[in-house]
Length: 559
Image (cartoon, rainbow, N blue to C red):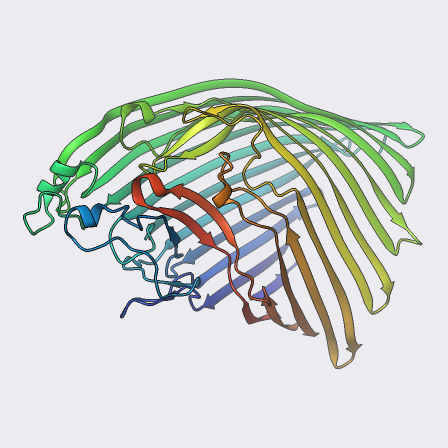
């Protein structure tokens, strides 16, 4: 990682780049196949600031990044009939896969392509002082990217389920706002926003592509015709275009006596069109066997008014209380994973949230201690969810009627001495569905996914040396999350138990040079970060594994 800054009379420029490489830690036991879950990436960002006169500035930023590591691996936990759910046995074609004789961070994967991701971004922030302590700020941005990767979804040497994802996207946005800086009790921002997003997406589900359905001794297009969707590639594609327009305000008024009223409104208009959505069943030779979803066009238009109102009470310069209510909004969305039936081509309804929040920000003991307290209560309506079928692995975008989340957070930091600081955090969460039916199952009362009841972290910052020779510091840390589900059906076997992770880094700085030796998950804890039930159609639970003990060195130089 490196940064460089140059400055002339009215122009300043900066360039920064970073690169990272790490070997794959998911050890592939198949001969000749690479290990998975590696890192291979770089990114470059350049910035140029031009200030032709007082009150006028232009900040141009450009960046690009590229990733091409071996893809992540899937820990497929076999069900009673193994990965393949007994299909191979019924065809007299060997046996299903049971992951015997290998460790939890070992894999036998036959489909190991690289994940390739390329991004480009360009933005221009223009600021104009128009007098009377008013300024106009314009933020124009353009982003473009593409992503292609194949996933060995079954994590096995057979071809029970292998998926390829391809995506191209571009985005153009413009934010224009008028802001005051009067220095009086009232300040405001008035703005307008536009966003255009264009996407092309294709996904290819390879389902039992090594299954000889008709028993003629070879796997060919006839097997797809006989076993549809088994022995087929089920491929969909579509083009999508979305626009979002908004007018918004943000204001605050200082009443004196420590009280400040804050508020804002936002009017949003969204529209979108998904066209050319089509799904075909293809034989292993790429020949068309059946059109499962004929070319389909979907669209939506939606208007929304959202906003926020809140009050701050500043007791003194070191203590503040606050409370707020806000209404949030998420636009309708298209289902990108429609494969097997025209009914899967759908648009999820817009999502809204009513959020009540309150808390305190405190600095104590002559500002050596910082304590932040927060409580919140959220009510969701039509929360958008990805629902994955255990039989087909199809991912449908659906709405859960009502859910609610409440909890609290505490953040603490203390500077015990010039050489020692302590930091800690605690989060408490209760997140449940109040009303909803998914796949015919009433999920009322179930916990929301990825919502542990307790999360906590703590760490120390210890300065071991700070003199002309440089600065040497030690930063151990620990984090903990309690048990959680990764799906809203709350299947007991898919529950991830609570776990703690230990890590830290040792830093050295001298002038423009810096170096860090770091380690993560030092106890080598095995844990999962995602779980999906695919036992019905494929005979396994789909799991993403958290990274094992990892360590490395990061070097930086500012010039």
